[in-house]
Each structure stands twice: as structure tokens, then as C-alpha cells.
Length: 312
Ligand SMILES: Nc1ncnc2c1ncn2[C@@H]1O[C@H](COP(=O)(O)OP(=O)(O)OP(=O)(O)O)[C@@H](O)[C@H]1O
Ligand code: SF4
Image 1 (tube, protein in one colour):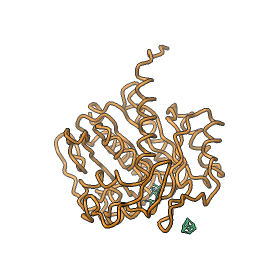
Image 2 (cartoon, helix red, strand yellow; image 1 turned 90 degrees about the vertical axis):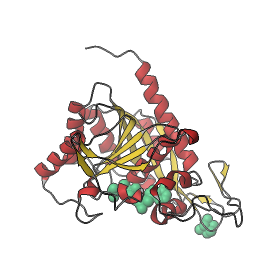
Image 3 (cartoon, rainbow, N blue to C red; image 1 turned 180 degrees about the horizontal axis):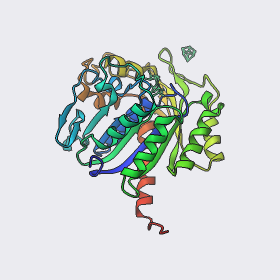
């Protein structure tokens, strides 16, 4: 069975589209591999699979093997660099026009989600991150049901819920948290994305929307608040063009100085080689923020694993 070699499954959820669920999935995956873990990403966002684009592997081909579809490798493990391997499977690889949204009706979508969970051949993985469609739609419910049926007890570690300062004001995120409670999926924590802005022109990180709502909401639902992630246009540049992030002198994000040295060549240059993404990401102002979020999530999962399982 495709999930049998996977240690922990983590869902990435958002009540609303466009809040940065795929970029959070991408950065969690990169951070986990930078900590030496073997990681898979399964993109079942049928509303517009964006994971292949984020990793710069839109043109990759998936092959069918006796064990199922073989995921695409972004980079292999590198023991000398303490790097774990990263593999991706996305519905986007199977669409004739990459980036298209799927217009199938309910039953076909449900069948596809089931097939995705059972027919992808994952090798040994410490973490499988699942990028889910936004909302609490049919795909969601089907995904949650199938996942809980197919997974071993305790294999689904829980969900990271992504929101933005504006989305907190809507009912969508609360709906998502209620959905988790109803389906029995533990919430690992809430990430408030697009919380502030790392300006490319001066060294300020400015709060352009009210921030802090995610933390209040997490408290209301008695779940962990994992942190605030600012909008960093350099992250977009990295994803869209493959250019290593560069910052004006004096740029301090989350207490860390990111000023780029004048004239110094950027690591990895401007090559679109997806294997270099993880190395370039280390220069991004969001990397230390995600390193902390990831460490928190790992610690929580490991702590729970050590707790004696409750019977009955
Ligand atoms: N913190 C951030 N800094 C800079 N750009 C960001 C950040 N978060 C998200 N983005 C960008 O905003 C856009 C939307 O983000 P993303 O695709 O991750 O959202 P999503 O919630 O997965 O959307 P969808 O509902 O379409 O799946 C992307 O271009 C992404 O790169
Ligand atoms: S942070 Fe500075 S450069 Fe950026 S928009 Fe604000 S004032 Fe302008």
C-alpha cells in the first residue's frame, strides 16, 4: 500500500483560497529536508494545482510502476549537507494543460482523490505533506474519510491550518477548524501568512494589514499558534524565476539581518534547476521563520508519539 512506508502524514489546510497554503506546504517541505528528514508532498488541490510550479518542476513526467505512480524527485538526500530527499506527486502532472483547474464533477473528483492516496508509490518517508483544496468541500470530506480509513492509527499526525490576517475576519478559517474537530483530525497549529511585508526597497518589515488575528483565533479554538509569516516579494522572485533572494542593507526580519553583501555572487545563480531551490531558499528571510515553525510541529508530533496511546 502506498502509505505503508510513510511515518507521519500532515495535512495543510485553509478555509479560503489564495491565503498561501501551497507556499506554506512548499516551505514546510524545504525546512523539513533542511533538518535531514525525508519528505513527500502530495498535491490534491484540484482547484488549481500549484505545487509543481512552486518547485519549478511543471514539465516533469510521472511514470507508472507496478507499485503505483512514481513521484517526481526535487532533490536527493545529501548526507554531507544534512539534507533529506524531497519527492512530489501532484494532480498537475496528470493534467494536459499544466496549471489548469479540474472541472470534474463530485464522484470523479472523489475517485481521483482516493486513487491519489492509494496509488502513489512512496518510498520511506518521515513526513508526507498533503496540500489540500481550500474550503470544506466534497474533496475535503472525501480526503479526510479516505485518509483516516487508509492510514495506520496515529499515522495522520494532524493539520497545519493556514490563514491570513484578513481571512481571520471571515468565517472560513473557523469552519476549517470545526471541520477538523468533526473529522477527528488534530490541529497541529495555525500559521498566519501574509502578516506584514518585507519591503524590497527599504529595510522595513511593515504591517500593511492588521496582524495578530490568527493568534487570537488559535487561542479561541485552544490550538497552537505557530507563527506569523510576512509577505516577502523575494520569496516570489525565487519561486517564479529561480533567483536567489537578495535584500537591501539593514533588512532585519524576525530579529535576523538579511542584508545581501554588495556585488557578491548569489548562491546557485539564476539557474532554474529544481535541485538548487532548497539551497537558495536558505537565503530567504522566510527560511528561519519556517525553521522555527517546522521545529515546533516536529516537537509536537514526536511528543505525542511518545505518549501512551489511549484505549477505548
Ligand atoms: N509569505 C509570502 N510571501 C510572498 N509571497 C507569498 C507568500 N505567501 C504566498 N505568496 C504568494 O501568493 C500567491 C498565492 O499563494 P499560494 O498559491 O500559496 O496560495 P494558496 O492558498 O495555495 O492558493 P490556492 O487556493 O490557489 O491553492 C502565490 O503566488 C505565492 O507565491
Ligand atoms: S517599507 Fe519603505 S520603501 Fe517600502 S513601501 Fe514602505 S516606506 Fe516605501
